[in-house]
Amino acid sequence: MNFEKQQQITISPKCEKLLKEFNIKEQEERIRSFKALNFQGVEGKTVYNTTTPFVMDETEYIVGRVESPELETDSQAVFFTEKNEIWTPDKNIQPFDLQDPFFKKINGELIFGGIKTFPKPTKDYPEALGYKTVFYRDHKKGLKELEQFVEGPDGMKGIRLTALRNGKIGMFTRPQDWEQGNKGKMGFAMLNSLEDLNTENISKAELINMQFNSEEWGGVNQIHVLSNNKLGIIGHIASSEAKTDENGYTTETKDYYAVAFCYDPETQETTPFEIIAQRKDLPDELPAKILKSEKKTTVLENIIYPSGLMRNKDGTADLYISVGDSSEGIIEMPDPFLKYE
Image (cartoon, rainbow, N blue to C red; front, top):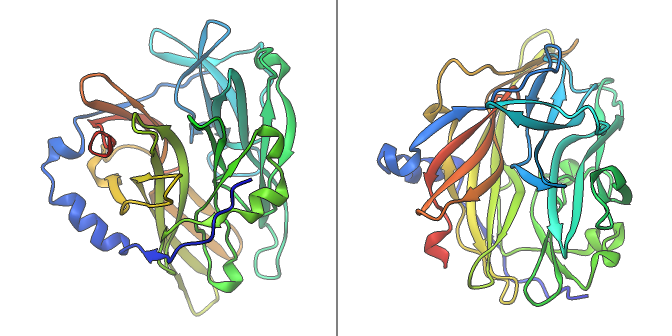
């Protein structure tokens, strides 16, 4: 295990400043094109927060979060295949009762995961959900042999893994404690093998030396091992604003942006966060979810959540992105990792 002594932490500028830096760029430097993905066969449910495409058993898949437009309690991770640019569920693969699916191939083995939710009512929000990250592995036997092998700590999303070129496993985590003002930070540790992935080691990961300010939060969505062995990170940064009226009814608006940065697992150095995508650069007609309960409305119009990046040989990249917690599309953009290599 390699849990190095924590370095001095630098606090990232707020979203407002990062957005100003991003919007200085010309339009073609931010986004070349956008294409919405077409999902069918889900009976009026929304598909978003997908994986990037991957191939297993000679078939290309995308796994998407599928749920009713007004709910979060019936979420499933569904495996889709594509024909004529239409993605439909693979009836031969049982959906998983998970949110926000992700995958990584490590040493020839598929590691699949997502967020498991469960009721965790509070006095103010009796409909509140608890959550944890759940991991599955296929033991190199294929999708139908996926079996659960690890659950992360309660209340932690954003746990991502990658195989490092030194033979170890790189692991990013996202510890948070809302009562203490920690809405979501990022940790990192190196594991000797997948057998070292457990709740204790996830909880022990040290914070990386670049963090969000106290009013915002974020996490790692995807890891790329770059040609120089550094790690190119696709992640998100988020904030919210809530207003409560005289009757005690709260309206909350959430803002999410896609970010990229570079992390050196050997020196533990982190480059500044850089916003690479924002909602206003995408078509206005894309839908957005609005969640309503007895005491609260949550507006998700300005959420974009990066599913992951696929790098192209021509210096561009395709960013798979969820919009408004209601749809999924692809942004073609300049490769954000080239400058780190």
